[in-house]
Image 1: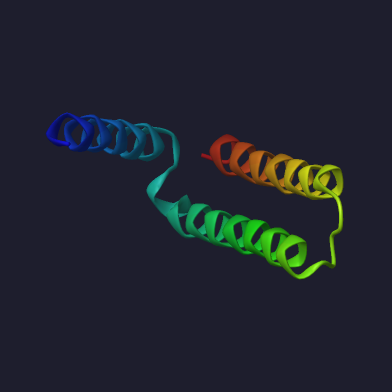
Image 2 (image 1 turned 60 degrees about the vertical axis):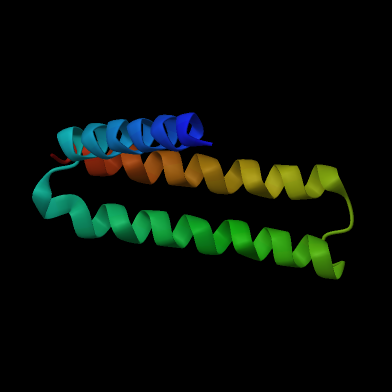
Length: 82
């Protein structure tokens, strides 16, 4: 389990370092909001699928794809405005 924790910690540190190197300090709030909105969107799709509002896996996947595309565009815009 220790090797998993070490790998997890190294991966987390890498991601944090990469994010801080491309997201300007004055854009951190925009980045945090983009992450939060994306999590909310994904949770909404999962809840809708779980409760039957979305009845097929294909529709759920399409919704997730749309949200990931929106998240990607938000991140690109945050980075480009650096």
